[in-house]
Amino acid sequence: MSIFDRFKGTTREQKAAAEESAHRQMDILMSLRGGRIPTGALERLQEAAAGTKPWMATLTPAELRIARSKRLKPIAAISATCWLHYGYSWTRGHAEGWGQALDRLAQEAKACGANAVLDVKMRTIRLPLGESMDFTLIGTAVKIDGLPPSSDPIIATVPALEFVKLLEADVVPVGIAIGAHYEWMRDWSGYAANPSLWFNTEARQLSDLWEQVRRTAHQDLRQNARNQGNGVLAHVNFSQMFEVEREVGERKIKEYLARHIVVATIVDARRGTPLPHEIKMVVDMRDPTPLTGTPPHHQAYATNEESGAI
Amino acid sequence: MTNDLPLHAQERLKGLRSSAHSTGVFTSDFSVNEFLLVRKAGFEPIGLCVGSCVYHVGVQYSSWSQNQEMDVLSKAMYHARELAMTRMRAEASAMGADGIVGVKLTIRRLEWDEHLLEFIAIGTGVVHGEGSTGFRAHDGGPFTSDLSGQDFWSLLHSGYRPVEMVMGSCVYHVAHRGALAGFGTVGRNVELENFTAALYEAREIAVERMQFEAAAAKAEGVVGVDIHEGSYGWQTHVIEFFAIGTAVLPLDQEIAPEKISDPIMVLSVND
Image 1: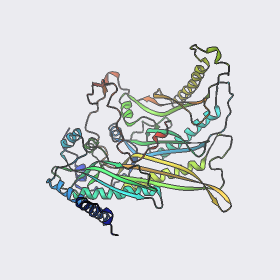
Image 2: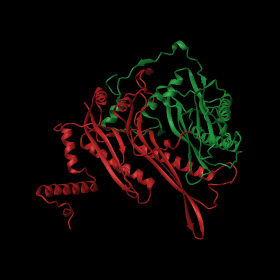
Image 3: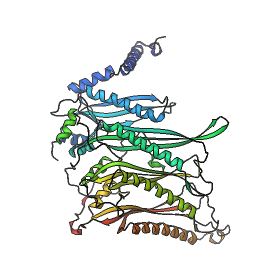
Image 4: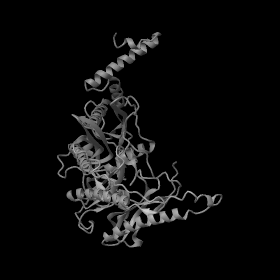
């Protein structure tokens, strides 16, 4: 049975559509395997770049206005996905998944002659399909009037308004960095979690495990950001600790897993260039005011913030 | 708005990368707006500072019919927070920070053990752009504050600077009412004075402790005070009152009130 047989329909139109879909899926599969953009997407991007097809942008009209004031011109809404199964490590899998999606997004950006991709959002579909997750990035490729296409378009995970504000202060948001680390600790003594039954005491072993894991994740983040910029704005900090009981020979031993993921926007900031605007305070006279509260830009992680304030 | 982007930004958009950065990579959990405002206020972020502490909370039995502070729990909550905060501050000192902005202090219960609480303190270490050390706390170490980047900018522009994040905690057992106490009040609205008094006392203890910390930090006042009530898996009548705020001092040159501009009143029409 060939891959096409499964798509056979009854009428001729259905058959044709099924075959086309099978071809397209095959093309997507082979292109991604070969590290290329799927043919359909590539053609669409090239046409948008040449101006023979309309541009597409995830920007709102207000954002378009601000983008235009800095000679930014949208080319195409672009996206990239990598659905990854965590073979050996959930924690490292996240770094790999996003890394792969980033490479693919950068390729699309280059294909349409962009200088930058802005408004990049990290997305994931919450489908509990075993030990796997999809890593999806969506953004808008833009060019800047008067600048040649970039060989290395920047990937900005901030909306258009923030993108422009940052550029004015000579801060370029250039990409995404991931810091991820996990560690197992085996508790031979059996007292890691309850060093004393009755009294207040710090569970020092577990504290140390946490410190170790968090700091290493942040180091990993720095390392990851180093060849692109000189700083990161970390918007997602996610950590979990688990206790697992295992049989080691005759004994039951408790093991602890701590993992931490931090996701950040890399910036290339020139020091000492402040925002060239005066900041004025405003009081909104509307109740309740829409000036406070913006929806989260990324929705790939439930952050730890919801586990309770103070 | 000027229409020209800074030169360095334009280069980067052309795909040219600046050579290796001499300053190293800073990390921070600021939003874009916070980042811009902290820089506008004359500071640069240098690194995320984290302190964690996993704490085993001891056992304490309360007297069923008595209002009382659960001092074992109070001390646990206090001690664990202090450990997390101290570790965070030590990390900031080690990287040479003048202060920590945007400290978030969170408590989590670890589901698999009812006696364990996890405390995390995380914030962004900052340095003064021109190297002034006048913003440090009275012990010469970095100041700490739970102010956001926006609040930090506003505080400096109101003539004050943050000194220390101060807190006070009191875990309190509110007495149960006797089994027969309900009969006398059937069909009447009555104040449960006992409960009222319990909340008063617990709150008072928490706030006094916070004020004591502020005095110890030689502060003039405390901004952004908040009093939380929380329960971390304790018996139903046990509550924690937790007071937190940022202790402040006037800047070297206090800003004259008439120099502080009035905010602009706007009426937003978007919905």
